[in-house]
Length: 592
Image 1 (spheres, rainbow, N blue to C red):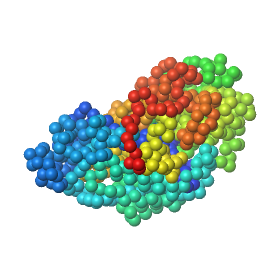
Image 2: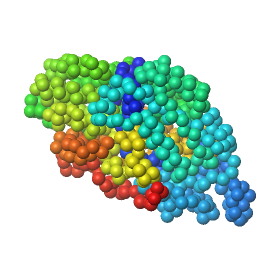
Image 3: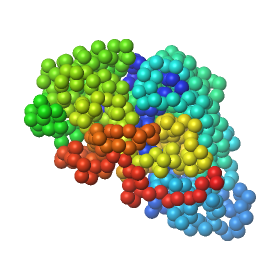
């Protein structure tokens, strides 16, 4: 349950590549490497979903049928079967045409998947020949796709306050250079139907909460560059996404999480990857109901561990949406027979956070709260936990799927006497060594060098990963409407330990509400103050999150009732090698 963010959110901005918005996006997709969304959706199937028109093996919108020997310069005999694009390897096998296609070196024809060191690598798609339809939409020609890479304004004190806590110093220039190489990776391995990417970095003109600047930037981007899609956006306002949608321009990861109707009203232009605040809250409520209610606060300090749990909510009031979410949480707790003993909101203001911490902890302690449910930013717990120790108050701390609070790099900055009582829900996957899997390792394999934005590549990579996976799946007729049709029709990603499960549309998880954001599942974890190892940006240190049952993940309705918190049996802090069954196949680096 993350703090809801809307156009009036408090705080804001960016220093260099320190963008809260993209960082928010990475918390649930940190383990996503490249193209995972469309990784296995054709395996064992000869047809794509038939209701979209964008994904049929026989009739796609703008799809091109090429008869080898008569189009595209093929030298295959005229008797060969015609090829209709898009065409995956498994479809080609089912249609009996796989052997007449030159799949090229990018495809491992023994597996039917791209020849890249990624367990979740997608299927190969037939190299395109023929007429791709040319200018299918604004920002698209027969040869190019205009993509704007939004980067937040430099020197924003709020974002500096957050990222300085973990010593991140990547610059916007380094982020842009990293994105350029990621795009080159997709151009090399993914099927783009005859088009190349014209990548345009754009630095915002206002801090992350500045609605006026956000709208002005969106307008300027559309008018000057006419992009088909924008990657990223201002961190703490929805105005940027709203303006792009009004101008019928698609964006990915361009707004903090919004209520469901925000996306439906701007369909099909605004897309996210992280789970929504409401979805996170759904997981947290089920976890509390099944594992914590009606029991003593056994994971707290000596003064509370033999006391029946009494819950309090501490949340970041960043907008009206955040307050609404807090009210919903309170109502659900009351309905479960566990009304909140205290509900306390705070503002993200570095100049007042220490004084706020004193007031917050005093209220929680006076209310007899044994278990603080925390839904806020990743730096404030540093002050809250320090103050709790000063007041000799040691409650349980429940991390309510809070953005970046579930990241080891930030948790190491919290008071260890307090955080040893911390546990909760995260949509992050169980961590893997970034040097052996994930975006960092794939980048280094592809280029032969470390990414310039070495600390924030995990932030940069998810947006293009989603876009290019869908692009090769939908085919040459590139429009926002076809993008939506393909994404909604597709099944979810392959379930695993080292990546979250993503799906879009109505897959039955959220009460019939169309899902325009990605991650659906979650796992449970606890803080181990003595474990040692690398954090998310490869810095060695003491203190690690431990993932229960090796990071087993749950969809809504699947949460177990057994409490395995603080049980080292079966818990994993980091997979130094990929989890069993998720080891990627190795290939020679194209960098030599």
